[in-house]
Image 1 (spheres, rainbow, N blue to C red):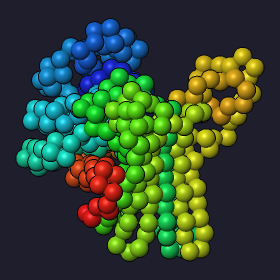
Image 2 (cartoon, rainbow, N blue to C red; image 1 turned 90 degrees about the vertical axis):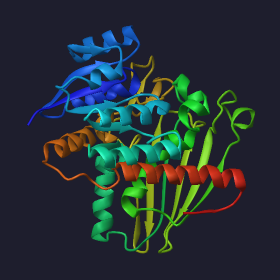
Image 3 (spheres, helix red, strand yellow; image 1 turned 60 degrees about the horizontal axis):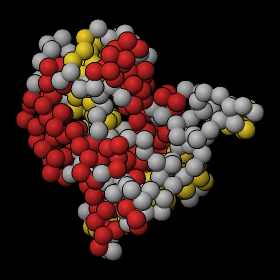
Image 4 (cartoon, rainbow, N blue to C red; image 1 turned 180 degrees about the vertical axis):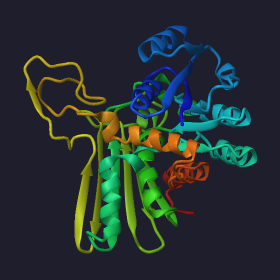
Length: 346
């Protein structure tokens, strides 16, 4: 069964979503909406999309669209998701769920009220290496799990919207640590308490003095059964985006390196076009991504959401509106713990 996709947002996230959608059987890239006319026209040309809109509300009025894919700056996630569900559309939304708990609660309320499908797009849940990790844990390969840690780090966001808290909701925790938080929530559910530590923002940041949010953040998530989890997101790491999960058990350990764990390495004197997201240069020894969108889970994630719309799959844990709100609560707890110096009980 074919599903017609309307993407809202023609920049970075919209582009890699569109590339991933093209690998999903029976998914049709049907429309794009963006207020930037040049970006909209370029996007439509590259991805061969005939229908274009300068206002997302006009896209929502299109009766042909089955599924709306929101790829916008953080502060617009709640507004557009709520409008889409009220317009009778199923929704996919990129992370974070929202920039405030109040907006997150509004999304959950509207989803329940309308009955539309909402898909919180945490790609790590679908990353092939982490799917295998989950299978190994369920098999008991490393015994009882004791401690898990995960990080997404790189040298800073390219988006102008990432510089102001009113637009993005925070700094590296809500932008980057959101991924390991989302994956561990998928595995373990909600922690009972959270402790957080972040750089101070602005002049108190380690590197990015003009960024209002933190450029380094760390959280400890404690679970009722004694399992401990640490998560990190930072903008102070050079050399390209670094995504790693490590898990320690009574009978073993495992590591999943999603961005530098590929089998390809290159030595180049003059450099080449692209290695991996946020890599500053490509001279010398590099480890270029083979299929970045597949390795990070985007292709399988979007296929799963399409299959849920057609009734071919049941929505996986960690991707609902309620899950998105829970993940936002964990992020909020990290920030509150950092500001108060206290552990936050959930």
